[in-house]
Image (cartoon, rainbow, N blue to C red; front, side, top):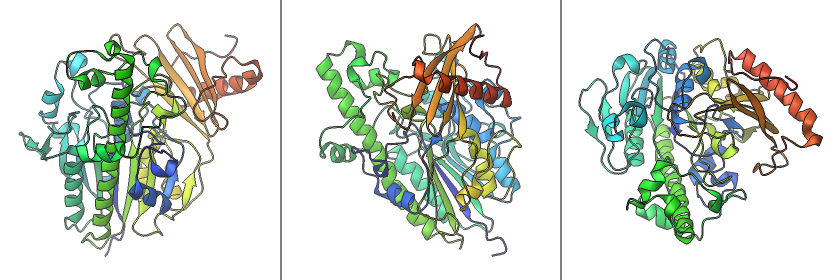
Length: 471
């Protein structure tokens, strides 16, 4: 071929935490395909969702910018058509581009915009607001795995997906892989699983349940859960709220829900097997680089919390794997311990395509993926920029943090100032059960990390009103 550059396939799942994989030691889930992918490629052991919510993650991935650069909130944000997208940058490098699945960067819904999830799913996203993709099989969002509709290119009316959403979207991705093309191809496949409501084919749930009781992480405290996301109330199906459910029933619901979460991941894993088989036999004569990642994690009862949007590892920590049909493109058996963040994805993906991402702020990790050295910078920003929904956690105050190889430091506050909130030694305490922020012996570490966080905020143009110790 005149252009021998590889195809690139990015698989983005939703709300899968970093440790929920067989090779990471989770006893509840079986992921043989992803385990093989990890052994045969590169694992980022400290990949972080910089702002661990669906919308801001997608904004940063699609633009290369931090959420604080546009004050992107946790939900209810419509990306400007003036933004240069990842798709456009890869197109400029000579790639044919495709997008399949959830977009979540256009509609305002619920308490933010008045639309229901069903309405948001069945309204098209104008081409002006999803630029950069030659092939479009997308939708805004749905959160219903048996009633999802997609739009094909510029069609004004949607087409209903048959069967379970994860299976159907992966099938569309395999169709894209099998289509003949002269130019190298770049595809993003974005599935909603394992995002709540937790829902998987009954056979998959039964397979998880048959292996025995769910084994929670050491920091899980079901009795301490005081706030349940709306999806958990809807799962009851009888109008009750989870707070009103007796403790024994709540424990049973939690166990069943987390087993279903694991089943959703196992369905993803099986579909990854079919997708990898497809790229190995694709008709275009090209090698393929495949990347697998999630937009944010799931707390799953850790620290008495559910959902996302927290600085804890179960929320910010996401899987990130790179693998290729040709081991020369992604040398196998490697693990990167340096923390990387969402803002690194745009320059990395454009770098893999031979193009150029934004000048700042992220790092191009394509050289590392191809066999190069880890980045020297050992710290990434964590942030919660804004919450526009009244009554939600962090509506009146927000947080910023710094995550290094071995430590995490977080401050919380508002325009009146901030206070140190969390300090964890991740090497000694990976489940973050001992907050050292007020420990006298760790005051020097806290002071150093506070200064490093303040410098990181200045460097990234974040005007969060952080103060230095002593004023």
